[in-house]
Length: 104
Image (cartoon, rainbow, N blue to C red; front, side):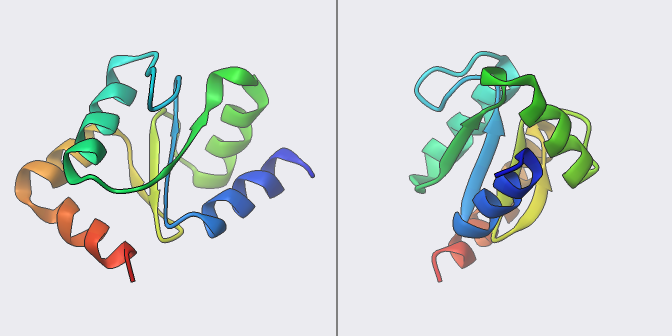
C-alpha cells in the first residue's frame, strides 16, 4: 500500500488519530507532547503515528492534508490542526465537544 493510501486508510479507520513526532508514550517534540497531554487530559483513545520513522509519511501527510506542520490531529476524518489549534480549542472548551462526538 502506498503512503498516501495508508494515511487515508488510517484516518478513516480511527475516530481520533494524531500524526506526531515520536509516540504518545514518548513524544519527541514539545508541540507533539502538548497535544498528547491535551488528549490524555480527556482520557480519549486514539491512534498515534510517528512521522519520524519514515520521512515519506510526513511528506505524503502534508500533501494530503495541505497542512505543513506536525503534529496533525484528525477527528472523525477531519483535520483539526496542529498543537496551537488544539491548545486554543482546549482552552475555549471546544475540543471536548468535538472529542465527545467522536465516541458516537
